[in-house]
Image 1 (cartoon, rainbow, N blue to C red):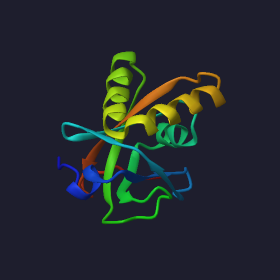
Image 2 (cartoon, helix red, strand yellow):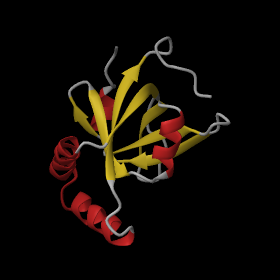
Image 3 (cartoon, helix red, strand yellow):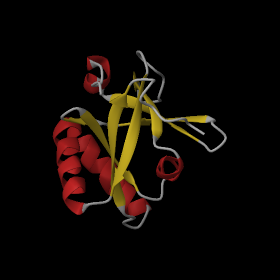
Length: 136
């Protein structure tokens, strides 16, 4: 196992690329926080990225701007989807600490717009190419 680059862990936004069943890449800019050797992302359970990750846990991740334009080298990883409330609380606290008022506002807007849809944590572990499973 390997860790993520400093460019990824220190970037305000990261581009999380998930893969459709066809193998087509779908990049999405997200906020991620470091938790030991992993990164965590808080997201809505019924989102497209979660649906794609249930099919294939393989991702690519790179530092990016708020639009998802890459600002550095991409790394491969695998994702574990966690719906445990303690893990969610912990990940949300890390996000609030790192991203401050912006995270609080975006979290509130997401809850209002989606009628308090359940949230999950994506725990991303860096992999080497030889460790990563196939995308399709």
